Amino acid sequence: MKTQVCIIGGGPSGLLLSQLLHLKGIDTVVLERQSRDYVLGRIRAGVLEQGFTELMREAQCGERMDREGEIHEGFELSDNGVMRHVDLEKYTGGSTVMVYGQTEVTRDLYEAREKLGGVVIHNVEDVALHDLNTDTKPYVTYTLNGEEVRVDCDYVVGADGYHGPSRKAIPADVLTEYEKVYPFGWLGVLSRTKPVNPELIYAKHDRGFALCSLRSQVLSRYYIQVPLTDSVEDWSDEAFWDELKKRLPEDVAARLETGPSIEKSIAPLRSYVAEPMRWGNLFLAGDAAHIVPPTGAKGLNSAASDIYYLYHGLVAHYQNGDDSGLDSYSQKALARVWKAQRFSWWMTSILHTFPDNLPYDQKLQGTDMEYLFSSEAAMTSLAENYVGLPY
Ligand code: FAD
Ligand code: DHB
Image 1 (tube, protein in one colour):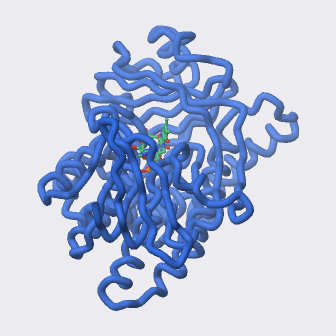
Image 2: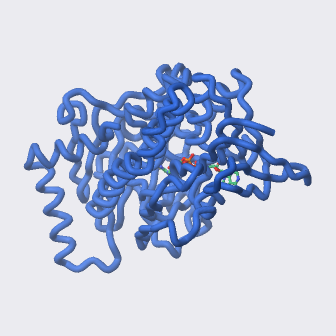
């Protein structure tokens, strides 16, 4: 098989790039290890920056998002039961975020790929990358139904998440990895219940962090901070709702509608960056190159800015023979990635209960919250990061 860009990974990064390139007449093949149903069964991010929504529209995938997604002009920050409002629109001069789940984003991208006859190959095994940094063109091999297939291409894009083979194809002496692991995870529950609040609530509490989010007016998504030693089996639905209520302001807890969970999972929190994001003819994008703790809602959004830079770099290459965008890809993407890392680390640090925090650290956490609500500059910094820094 022959293509211009072979994309490994059919998550949001890979599908979005494939769709954008297709619309510019650039041929791609997407290789995905899982089935489509499996990919669509994963419940992940829920908050989209404006840069992401614009990219979805450019990819001709924004119609349902614009119809069903909710524009949020702010969110609530609760500190041990005292809730205060963060006015994103006011502090950014008019910017907002869109609440629309990653599952729906991915479904829209799959449907768009199908409509245009895009090649997305599922259930591939043993994906291997070859000749990434030699004088000859690269190629990718995989097996499907026991047969080995070879894809010849100009470029390989590694959009295969944290565990995929692309990043691992870069020699260890070329790659620098930066990592921070947090001593807790998030237990997430999806339920067919009315969301407790029209806006998201990020709740700091001595018992641990909690987040009230939503997918629609009949579908709620809630998270609570749990120790890394906990497993999903340790948490009955009843125990989850009881604990969530304890971490929310009393009036919010009183109106919380509970119900059976339709998904329940634990995600450990981690910050990670791999540099550089290009090696020869391989480009890394999204979770393949960087991970953030979910507190700032930056995981999916950082993947989108990578795709933006890579898309424009590839279009300039194929349409004008201009390689400057590809040559500066790693540097440009990483500059924004690190700002998302800083923001996600900061949101995580001020809102969670750290098991080994000194009383001194706790005082600083409280001071950070007070400073936020007493300084226009601090609030502006939070708001401009949350809605997303410019690409
Ligand atoms: P992925 O979505 O990971 O997609 C990569 C794809 O590559 C997958 O479909 C995978 O099956 C495929 N793949 C892997 N290996 C191979 C292989 N060998 N061959 C072929 N294909 C392969 N972000 C937020 O902003 N908010 C959240 O609440 C949030 N929650 C999360 C919860 C979890 C459990 C995880 C893991 C992530 C969460 N994120 C969240 C982060 C966000 O979902 C990611 O940043 C986003 O999915 C990145 O998209 P991606 O396409 O780069 O990677
Ligand atoms: C969601 C997840 C987040 O990490 C976040 O910061 C906001 C919302 C969600 O899944 O809805």
